[in-house]
Image (cartoon, rainbow, N blue to C red; front, top):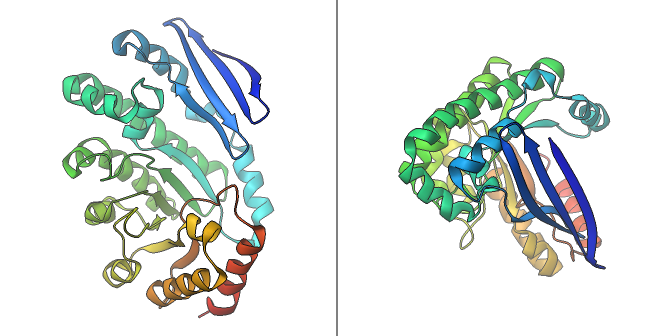
Length: 298
């Protein structure tokens, strides 16, 4: 149902043109790739909502039992005793819609207000799909955890009532699968989200990242640890821009502060907020690892 054509726009940029074609119609999408980020959509496929989204439905909602989970199992085998391995279930509902809709998150907010009935029906289908994937990951692989991404579904973009209506049902459904199979449920929340944490805990998350501190986020590691530390594992503490631009003294100070704030009693993983920026000196990464190895055992 999908055809692709890739070509170099210039030495540092690749464009990929997608054509989605099935019984419900044909859609087109343009994505860009560069050295440190792959397939970022710049021209999403859903231009007219009720004409185009049925094509996405036909394309996206495969039978979870028919998908290949071999790469997840292979990743677990290669990880071995070096760490935990998680299977990525997918995105929150708001993020899923934003990925395909022309106009992105802003247009999706308007769509959800204007056409709630249509999206409530699609939400139920999406929940069934994600829980099906979660079940298959647990059944077919021995990974220790399930991972759900939130992307733009944060208080930086939407309000708490909006989050409760459209995303918490997805979180709770995947959490139920994780709990039933005794797996970690790792939720990825960028930006501001401290006001959502009580509801996320009630929904059943057991691990949270990247816990971005102000001004990018609104999480304070010590406060979150003191409030939820006996029920919630925490991951983060280091801004990737600090790792790229900061001095060794600044990186060490922040790493030691993060360990002091969140490591007591266990359940803390020192890490960067999501990833490592392209220009980061690899010696800075080694330096952070050395700090964790020296000061992070307790």
